[in-house]
Amino acid sequence: MTKEQLLSLIGDSGQEHILAFWNELNDAEKATLAEQIQSIDFSSVNSWVDGYVLNKPKQEIPADLTPADYFSIVPETEDVAALYENAVKVGEDLIADGKVALCTVAGGQGTRLGFDGPKGTYPTSIIKNKTLFQLFAEQVIGLQNKYETELKWYIMTSCINDTATREFFEANNYFGLKAENVFFFVQGLMPVFDQNGKILLASKGEIAMSPDGHGGTLLAMKKSGALQQMIDNGIEHLSYFQVDNPIASVISPLFVGLHHLEGAEVSARSLTKTGPFEKLGNFCMTEGKLAIIEYSDMPEELATLTDDSGKLAYRAGSPAIHVFRRSFIERVTDGEFSLPFHRADKKVAFVDASGTEVTPEENNAVKLETFIFDSLPLAKNPIILEAVREEEFAPVKNKTGVDSAESCREMMQEKAAKMLADAGVEVPRKEDGLLDCVLEISPASYLTADALKGVDAPVRGEENYYA
Ligand code: UTP
Image 1 (cartoon, helix red, strand yellow):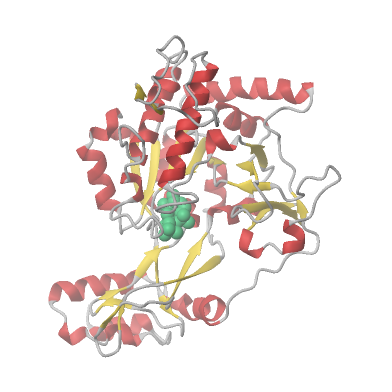
Image 2: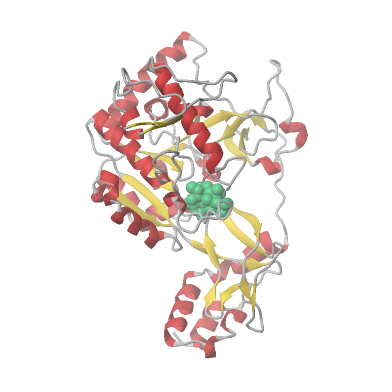
């Protein structure tokens, strides 16, 4: 493409500066920049800049907001207990019949973790150093063995980590899965803006771009053919989880069964928040629809509100675990479909107008992302099922401290300890109750019936791995 053709694509969006160094680029660099420019919807740039960059959108809290109801994980009545029992059977049948696929969103940049490579390739388990992808793959193998079936696994990547992700699976022989059952699909990218609404250049010949958020999943499934493949394979439900939560059940029979029986288009797991300000989205109802209000948007008086039983009224927080009915994805992506953007202020290195590379010390850039939970209000009959935190949520977000690899390893060990204890195996603990051994269980084995019954007890003070 010529410079003139590219300028006409840029139109009146006020972003011509992205071609400032055009004459200094070689042919390959020109081709790359031209491709990036063609991928951007310049007709929307002015509205993005006005709506999200120059003006920070303030989330209005609807006057009719109420906490959303959820199914408690411990059934409160006999009827609910019977419903759960049936749901488990229904869920197991759906899995065995190959009607449930998995979806892992792995397109993020993992900036907080600061790891060089796709987050899914981060070594996480405490003894074997298994990566996040391997831990999920082993769960899939466990389910396949348990239900004598084959499962399809959809993994969302972004241009930034797609090749590295595919190569990682190839190099590791898909961790024992069949390559044809693992389907990678690439999400969209958005340009990164400076705080004045100008698109940033990462180098003289490259626009700074970032993934368009996990909200890009549904459209990317449609565009990539993943959705069509689900249709062709008779898959009815998609079990969705994030790549950085290795203890999430890749498919929960109870959850998928309940979602199916209740006729839900989208379902969500919830966690009981540890306190009013825990950094989880809040499940709410407004205008008869389920919605999530981000923790940062929740007014203090609502966050701290208590109900008649003295519990936090808005205690149901989101660990970003969902089931989507395939027909819902088909319905919403048929025609115009968009989710609102959320703005994130970040530090992004760039090339300034003089061509000098700048590494900022303060936030200088605005990234725009859509969030998957904004699809909840579009869903008919959505349900929420509470999850036991220790069994389902140990995110790896940060290098150390809260929600880090460190805290995740501790929780993985506690989950392993509980499984062993449930199987009647004595687990050594110190006087203060902390584990007195190092524990790891292969997810492949803990999903296979009775795998842990009768195993040797962990040796005090030693590493104990259960394959
Ligand atoms: P986070 O919001 O934690 O973002 O993503 P992140 O990119 O992994 O990490 P930071 O914020 O840069 O430190 C939650 C989940 O959503 C996926 C991530 O891969 C992770 O599984 N995600 C996020 C995407 O797939 N695409 C995106 O554009 C953003």
